[in-house]
Image 1 (tube, one colour):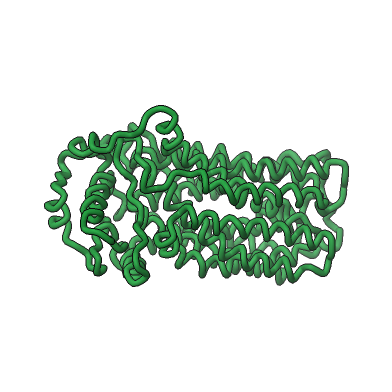
Image 2 (cartoon, helix red, strand yellow):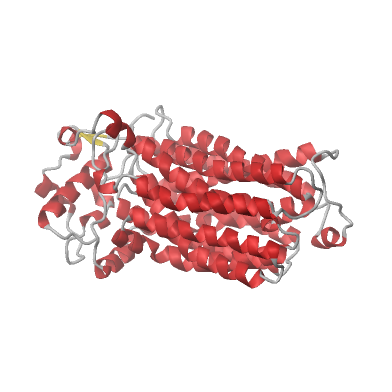
Length: 505
């Protein structure tokens, strides 16, 4: 992160040092939060809620569309190939999006990132009107991948840097709940529009409604507070990158990996975090149910995400336990939920194949049919696990740093690896790999992700984040990393005066 002026450098280092320990009693009074309506609007929770609305209107509706299975179409091949192109470009875009976010700023990055969702939904509308527009759908998916890398990197940086260390779980579930209401509303719209049909594809009205909402979402970042004006609930400032040079950004990107290699142990969790969507959306919901039931299932799935994110968020922010204890508890919950849901799903997957679905041997199920209740309950639990998984990944990254610049890199790594995996598994679905193979790969990868994360939790998660852990925050104008003692001496920081997250056992 480049530092343009000496005064800004000292101020930034002071802010980082305060941020990493919670509230510094010597410095907190310097940064009083505004009061009145301005104070309410600039409150971190309000800004996180606005961030949730941005993703409600874009990724939330994208999720609703994909949650219908095949993007609401009859043939899943076009949807699968479009998603494969999407996640391939997403993987490349996200890896460098942290640097782009730090140069352009998160507001502009969010606006640019939001535009791709409108184009993507418009492509499905075009295909509904003209079945030969499948090429447009695939191209729109590729463009959306570039945009999504920008949006999600800016989102991760904001969501994890605005709260104090003891409020990160809360920040995640506030965002995740609002964001996934987009999927709930989208599923409800699709369900209402298709309630009186027993067909297998959605009508033009559903796509038009989604398109209008995504266009509205592009403007929401304009109403958000600039990060450089943000204050946390404890009065500490949220540091924001000050348009660094690309040279310094490249150095910082490298240092984010080299000086904190434990992030590599989270990469399998990153890889699994979108892998399971292919089986859930296309090989389960899209394969087994008619369109109105798929719409209902989608609404249930995204509504259950609220339960999942709040439950894991409350656990990860529990005041009576140390941060390390909470990290291990969250890991244990995920492991149990993965085995419960996939053992349950395995017994269903044994009953049908891709061939039996395509031939009609396995008929499409309606929500009025016998046996539907158990199957929708499984889908609900998959939604809970998804939210818990994504929330835990974000929380673990937030436990490694409080620096917005570093968190932008971590978020970019997360989305890049996540998207690379998604591109591969969506392509596997596009070339019609057997459903059982996709299911078993999903189960195996999620377990592997948890096993790799365990040593990272043991070795890297501390009860608070120290200045020594924040390499990026200590970069000077040339990209050299300054010594911790030098920075502490310069700003007069005394770690012993800091209030930590919690030291309870």
